[in-house]
Image 1: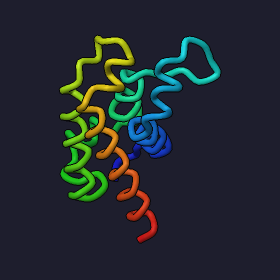
Image 2 (image 1 turned 180 degrees about the vertical axis):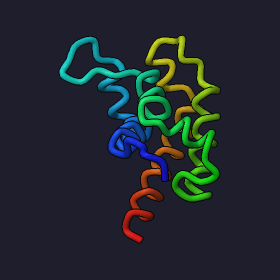
Image 3 (image 1 turned 120 degrees about the vertical axis):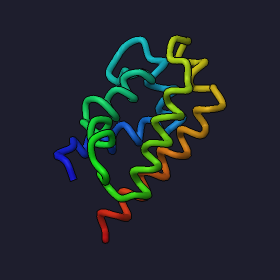
Length: 114
């Protein structure tokens, strides 16, 4: 497996899977917690190195997990990020993003135990 920033991957998956967190933090105008859809996506695929790893490697985590990450990436790209945060959070596609992100968290945790 490439040298990925795994804590960042886990943190961003948690953010993308949590509706309440998104409402609290993506809509915040002051700290202590502020984030956005764009920051979550960038952190997951760019800052962590995951996007490059998925493009370059035949297998990053496992074939099932990698396929689900690619599915998540496609879902995220289908969401118009140039809208207000409220519109992004309530976009029906975000429900699928939250489901996929939660599934990825569960699969990664399971893989760690094995």
